Image (cartoon, helix red, strand yellow):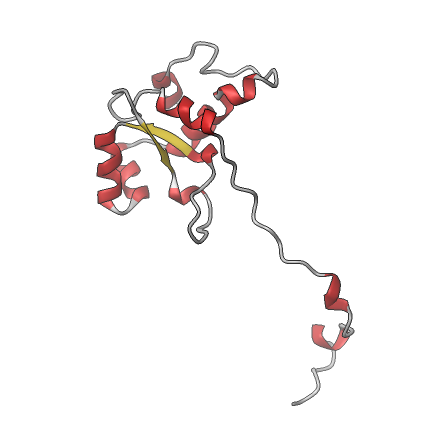
Length: 137
């Protein structure tokens, strides 16, 4: 094996220097049963029907083996629309066809979730804004 080229990074690293390096961890995936219950209490984003399922937006975070995205990236969908989305296969295209941007809505719902009210955070939906108003933003 040839020695590293002059000026290369390998030429300047001492053998023990790698010991302190760590892999960057992905952000933790937040879980909250209370938030999921709050999401299920909302009307479907498409048709406003209740009850709703809490749909995790798969494209909101990088894939991880056997792990759903954080609960903060959930939106309410009635059973019919939830099944339709999963049957479609291309989630981004499904939302685009409906002209709905789910990520800002998921953020608004996360911020409005009762899990934050215990910390004194005032939330738009909790303060009386309806879901259609949130969708229009």
